[in-house]
Image (cartoon, rainbow, N blue to C red):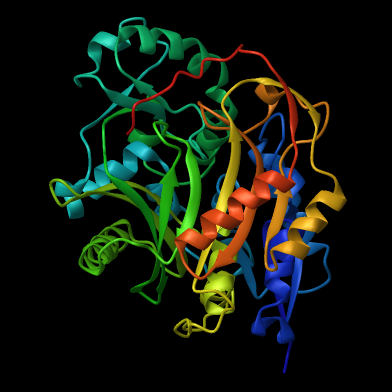
Length: 437
């Protein structure tokens, strides 16, 4: 059988190991169209340079690509349709991907298929001195760039003072993503009225309740949902504490979310692509709210699926990219439940010490199946880390499995005892406490 050559935009060691453990790996070779260092922790994104570099890597590999994939957000997801078209392989269109990622355009599309499930929204120009008075929403509400990732520059606005405090950060940092994102509208055949908006930010009314992510894919026009992952937030804060799978939400609620997902994904025209959609369920009113659409798998969920199903959902991403209908996931993993914990701090500071290799080894020995990824190193100033949300700093992620939620939490607290961090904390960043979302 001819081996398949799969090129990844944003390949890292952790996800390479996931890919190489797939049953598909027997007849696939995985190549980096771009390395993770090209798209994360960088001072700026040069879209033209990234497109040229990825194109050069594929052409210089000496093999013809059979698939192009990505599991990280911008700019990786945007490169997939460009490279897929350039090399004649299966993939979504750039228009469909941007209908998911451009927050204002996406809301306009969602209005057509799921109007009852989206918040009120309004686009505004953060450089307009009168912008606060022009926003037709009553606080509290959220403001965020029209294009962002990982809650970068997203702020909860309780009053005008919050807005005025957030504005300098928005103005000084918004070009980090908006400038390279706008490059796509300037150089590809995309709607003029969207690409030339003066407004670069969104204000949205609040969604509340339990949060989750619906994971699915589109294969030759058929939209399939295969899993729901709970997104648990820190107590009294908006930052995520952990992702947990399978979801604890009622089955009836999950079915309703799947139905909404099928409608909106068909509506934006996404095809030959995985996707995930973030939802809220307000238990009081039994109402479902749609937060955002991502045209990719969530790589943060891959280990959860592997622990429960025996394979990460990278398998689904790969099948779709290679033109094969994914097989249903079986429950053959070593755990009944799995979680991806995000160890955070909510104050700025300098990292003095992090867990050693021996510390991490003790965790793996005492808690089999547990994996720790450090996100900081000694000497890091937390405020200077790239891609953080507006209210916290991520120190590490911890992947673990268990019989039930109680065992997951017990194992996580044991990890905290075994993983010492030392941080010289100092308040210096706009990071107000929030009362929920």
